[in-house]
Amino acid sequence: MTPPHIAVVDDESAITELLAHYLATHGFRTTQLRSGRELMELMPADPPELVLLDLGLPGEDGFAIARQLREHWRCGLVIITGRGDAVDKVVGLEVGADDYVTKPFDLRELVARIKAVLRRIEPAPPAVVAPLAAPPPPAAGASLGFLGWRLDLAARRLDDPAGAEVRLTTGEFELLATLAQHAGRVLSRDFLLERTRGREAAPFDRTIDVQVGRLRKKLEADAENPQIIKSVRGAGYIFIPPVEPVS
Image (tube, rainbow, N blue to C red; front, side, top):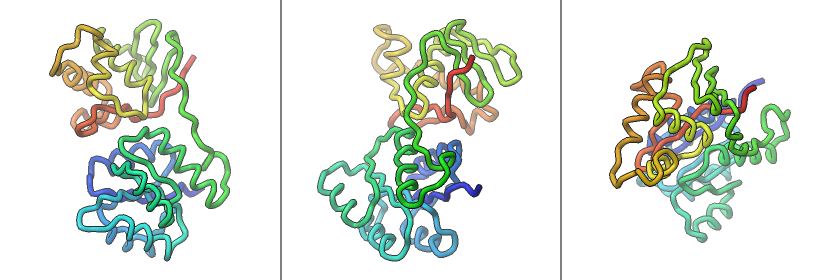
């Protein structure tokens, strides 16, 4: 079955790349765009089932783009923006948006909203559009699986996809466990410091950045182009792959 096509329109490449990669892990095909003009060029050539549209595009009126999209094409429209004002939200919905999500947002929630919109537009098999409920944090003694890796929380052990143990320091294990238990959510450095070091954390502590660098060398195929632990500029870090309890 052809995966649903989603157009991600945002002038910040870090955001479009993050969304494109995360959506791909959930079975979507994405096109990254930086302007309303690029979106209008895409629509007749390769129309998406849904558009994620940032309102704050430089030199362009996001509401006008949304209105034009709604007037000429039948597709889902979810506005993603830093504008949290109630008036902007009302205007966005009135010009035809199916949903309005403010930044920063939880990626798992965004995927659930996207699937809900697609389900309303045209019913499809559950494997394609059934909403994903955000799973509760795994029990302390559970093992977590992601991309073939296994993180045993009770034994405090990490095994690679081949089954070989990967040695982690105490700090690296605590950080990886925290990120994996909150997969799909942007976690600030302060939150990570509090969860991994508690009261020992000091202002401007760069321990998290150092440990993330070490984890990337152990987890990533290319530490310079991370696909598991990604940085979110000005916000912190996010664990990208889906995580599930394993026996």
